[in-house]
Amino acid sequence: MARRKRTISVDGNNHISVDEETSIRQALTMAGFETETMPPSITSGGEIITASDYDRPVPAPTMITNQTDMVKGAPLRNRLLDYEFELISHFVSEFPGKPRSIELDDNYLLIRSFPLPDSHIVDSVDLLFSISAYYAAPPPGLHIPKNTPNRDQIAKHLGGHVFTGTPSVLLNRIPQAYRKHVEQLKDWDWICFHMKDWVWTFNPLNPLASDCLYKFVEAVLVALSGKHR
Image 1: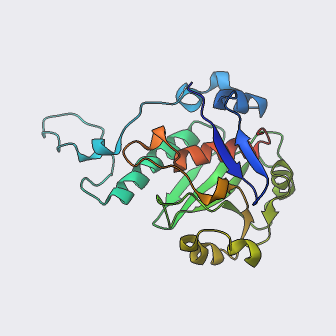
Image 2 (image 1 turned 90 degrees about the vertical axis):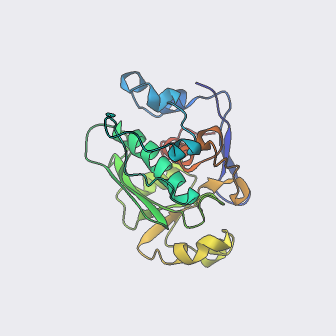
């Protein structure tokens, strides 16, 4: 696969990055996942579909299609979220073993039973992402439910950067557009894992050719597995 370098920050000074010489396949193998049995799309990428594809004409009634629920002519943000939702849904569905679900609204993305390596006490965790400022800004970290059984293991993989609630000193550092929505998450613990300097390079014409929500979820999987640099 084409190697991608993405720099992530767990606080204002320490940086975590997927080394440009380490592919997603290699990172998942190091984390204990059997990548050889996974469909190729999960480790080598899939077809790149641009946002302009959603503007295509409505097909003739006689055509056989596998249309999604994406609304043609919807605002660009909605179309991009629909597109990323489809990518993330496909990604998560390729981990067998238990039911998993994804929920999306204007402000949050919730992945239930996100997969973790078998080395964890519980090999899954619910993840909540604030996306109220999508696509102008990347997620301001992510959240796990309070009293998560494998919280200590997750914190160890992330250098201890798991916090009860969202400390005010850290809340004041995230992008302003996110603060109200993050502050409301009283029953969740915050994982301070985010793009360096809270910014990303997003290409709405081709999200997969840039930083995007789907790639951020990929990076979270590697980080929670403890196999990042």
